[in-house]
Image (tube, rainbow, N blue to C red; front, side):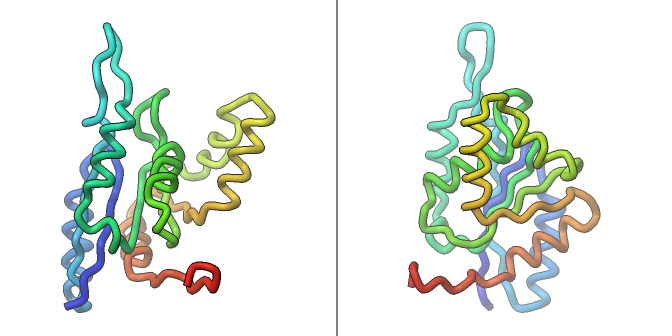
Length: 168
């Protein structure tokens, strides 16, 4: 049986969806190995406030046993309000897992608001240009977190990486 590997980042458990995907893929001769990472588990207390512990999150990501064999990476967009969103996760992932060359799946219940939120989040024009450049250079697929998310994840997992003469 062929193995496929997935990392999914979401502050809400996706276990039921992932188990259903695993069963669907098993019927197609694919054994799905996955890891769920909840960014809320990486918050640390600083005085009276909490903040996202990016270093611990990166360590968790890099300690994934199948990271070098990863077939799919997906993240919810709405994660920790005012601290971490899916684009932040994509940036962390891209910087710390440069060997991954497939599309990244970014999903949200309100996916239609994500692009404008990303671009208008920072009012500084130079920062907006940097964000736009990152988005144009990073293969991101956007999906709605609805009843079709399961099928989008399955397609994303099964998709072979695009051949690139520069990397091969």
